[in-house]
Amino acid sequence: MAPPFIHGPLTNNPVVFLSELAFTIVLIMLCLVIYFKTKELFGLTRYKGIDYFRKTFLFLAISYLFKFISTAIMLSTINSGFPMQRSPLVPISLMLVSYFSTMAIIYLFLSFSWKNIKLKYISLFAPVLAALISVFAFISRESLIVVSCQALLLLFAGIFSHAVHKKSKEFSKLFAIYILLSIFWLIGLVQLSPRRFFPPGLNFIAQLISFIILIAIYYKVNKWVK
Amino acid sequence: MGKMIRKRERFEVIFDILKIIKDHHNSIKPTPLLRCSNLSSKRFYEYYKDLLKKRLIREVCDSSGRKFVTLTDKGFRFVEKYKLILGFIHEFEL
Image 1: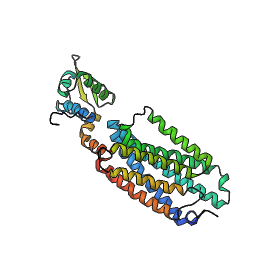
Image 2: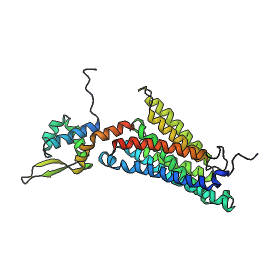
Image 3: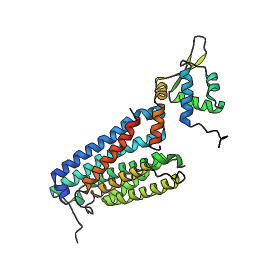
Image 4: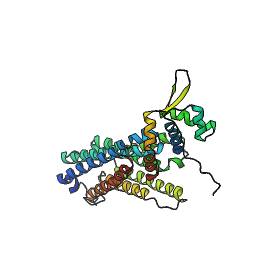
């Protein structure tokens, strides 16, 4: 039985494609604004937490860019009639999306838990893990591998954060925002798989919600960085 | 709890040192600065070296060779933005 929504109307619809492009540009801009707005704060303090926080949004901006490039490559490959499995650009773009988005997730996790992590070479661990996941993605040419690995990372981050913040007995709204942003990133990433599990248009909704979350984060940043 | 003295956070110590310099017309000798900072000599010099390294303060010598400490532009910016820095770190649980 054929998997549902294979190369469905989502990718072949120019209106949806253009709206995806517009959303991608806006999401990248928002991430870069957050990155550059916090430049002075980091310059003054050289504080590790701020460094991790800033780099999260830099990696996220690059991830959104490569995700869109991946979508465009897949679309052009499908439209040209060239078998997607043989296109060399598909695994390369997937590898780059995988690397930068894994870095974003790890840095986001580090931004609020770096004080509780005693690992000496944590800054080395992040790129090694991200590279490992991106190699899997390159070999398998399957975004679902990346989604699974990143979902596991999120689960670990959730358990670790819960254990650390258990003492405070306060539910961190910020952590919930981060988890939501990551979940909607993963939903968007599933779209890069040749097998489509979600109905067409869900990626649009995922991007819309990511946009709202990023606006909320931007608003919070703007409150403190004039 | 009443007897417990809260350990000063790192940023608070940095701010206090910079504020002392600023309040002394941006020119103070290292020894009075140590005295005003309420830190042990060892801890003070750790912070002192760190502040020099981060270019928040600089050492200047007068015509008779006496050493003074002054704030750099970056140091002034830190004092000015201190509350915003703390607020940002607290807001994002960094």
